[in-house]
Length: 82
Image (cartoon, rainbow, N blue to C red; front, side):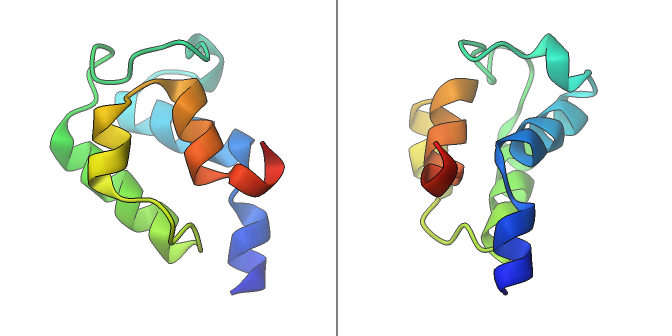
């Protein structure tokens, strides 16, 4: 499990979100509203499940959906490296 935790960093989270949106990671600014950028609830749930499986057990769908801004998600999903 520790390997999964070290693999889940801010760069990986950004890459996962970019892949879900079918854009390059560098196209996403810290202040990007991910719902406005096209992320729907199904893809959000898939990301939550992926990240929870990677060790980010503190996250949940409701928290991320309530604040759909990339920079905030990076802080929530990877708090130990924020």
